[in-house]
Image (cartoon, rainbow, N blue to C red; front, side, top):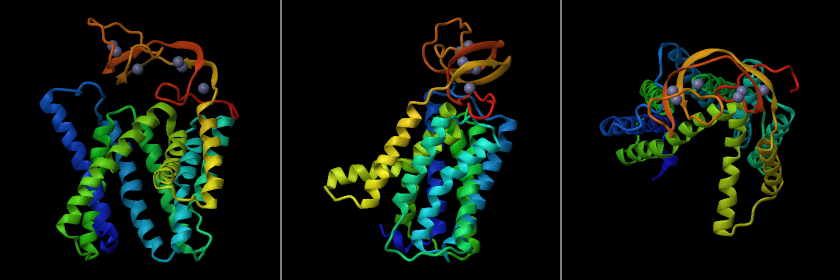
Length: 329
Ligand SMILES: [Zn+2]
Ligand SMILES: [Zn+2]
Ligand SMILES: [Zn+2]
Ligand SMILES: [Zn+2]
Ligand SMILES: [Zn+2]
Ligand SMILES: [Zn+2]
C-alpha cells in the first residue's frame, strides 16, 4: 500500500470512517447476541452537547488547522510540536475542569513531555518557527479540548462515543476532500484505511476513554504519549537496531515519569454527595454497596442512588472523585 501518494484529507476521512463503521459492527454484534448491551450506560440528551463539542474541536477544527499549518512548517518542527497535545490536555484539565493533579503527577507529566520532545527532535533537519508552527499548537489545543470534553462523558458507553465521533469526523473530512477537489484513493487503499481505522484507531480511542474514566484526562494523555517509546523499544529488541542518542535520553525520562504516575499517593477525607446516576460499575469498588435481587459479580449498569458518604481512601480523579482540592494537594 503506497500511502505516500494518497492525499491526507481523504486518508484521514477513511481512517475515521473505519473506526466508526468497525465499532458500529461491534454494537450490531452485541445486539444480535444480546450480549454486553446492559454493561455500559447509553448516551443521553445532555451528553450530546459535550460530544458535539468534542467532534467540532477534535474532529473538524483541529484537522483543518493542522492541514493548513503543515504546508508551511518543516517536518521536524511539526513532529516536535505535535507532542504538545498532552501538555494542552493537562493544562485544560487543570485550569478549566479543576482536575486534581498532585506534585507527583506534575513531575510525571513534565518528564513524559520532555521525553516526547526528545523523541520528536531531529537535529539534522531544517528548523523554523512560523505561523504554521503556531497553527500546529492551536490544533493541539483543540485536541486538548476534545479530550477534556470527552472525559466529561467517559462514564457513558465508549463504543457509542467513538462510533459517533468516527462517523461524524469521517463524513466531514470526506465532504471537505470533495470540496477541495482531492482525488479519492484507489479502492484497495480505501479498504486498507477502513480496516486500519477500525482495528487500531477505533480501538485505541475506546481504550483512551476507559483510561480517562479511571484516572482522568491529564494522566491518561501522559500515559498514552509514552506509547511510541514502547513501540521503539520493542523494535530495537526485535530488529537489533542501535537506538539514537535522543532515544537514550528520552527512555530514562519516560520510565521515571511513568514510575511517578503509578506511585502516586493521594489520600484524604472527602465527601461524596448524594447522587442518582447511571454508569457501569462493580460491587467491590467501595462505592457501590446497593443490593440486587440476583448476586452480580460482573460489571453491570443501571440507574442507582448513592447516599452521602464521607470517607478516606487512596483515590485518582476517576468517575467518583472529581472533587476540587485546595491547590497543591
Ligand atoms: Zn482527592
Ligand atoms: Zn455509581
Ligand atoms: Zn449495581
Ligand atoms: Zn471513595
Ligand atoms: Zn444495583
Ligand atoms: Zn471517595
